[in-house]
Image (cartoon, rainbow, N blue to C red; front, side, top):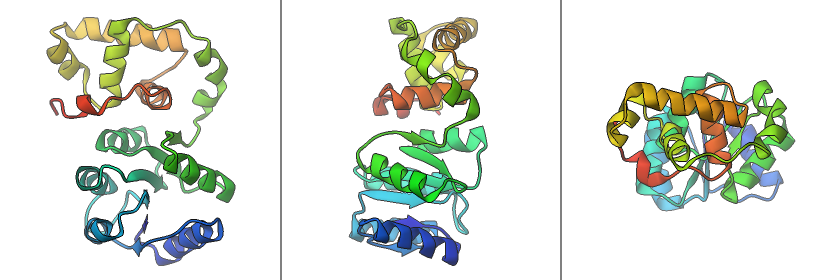
Length: 208
């Protein structure tokens, strides 16, 4: 299912998917319609814009994940802002791709999303460090636990409360994790956690 309020863009995306052999069960222009149609169409993958006329793509993602947990959401957005990516991931999006992506990259992202893989538009800093991440030292149990929580969008304060730790201790664990994995910021941590299967939906229901 394709959700975008720009008719030409929506039609182009649907056409690319159909030509690649995908069954496009619906194309819709707003969030409320997406939630209604998804109930009947039961899409496996939802290609979703963040900027919709009636509600945000993040709200739509949250609604889709609640009502149709089997549906995988791939956000296709013009925004590359870190906060937008974090909000989408926290709401349950499996992937996040920029609209500037080439057609082959988009189709590959849809295929991988359908297979359950996490997909993100590569960031310059993320691409350069991939090999070193794979060879990075193993994280401690506590570092992994905190990384999972960071990936769900929890703040350091919320994590500290949940784990009965000081705010500074949580910060230290995060900094150690960044150093071990050769990462630079929170968004790269989220991407790493998803790509390596470290997200845990049970944590997503924690304090907001």
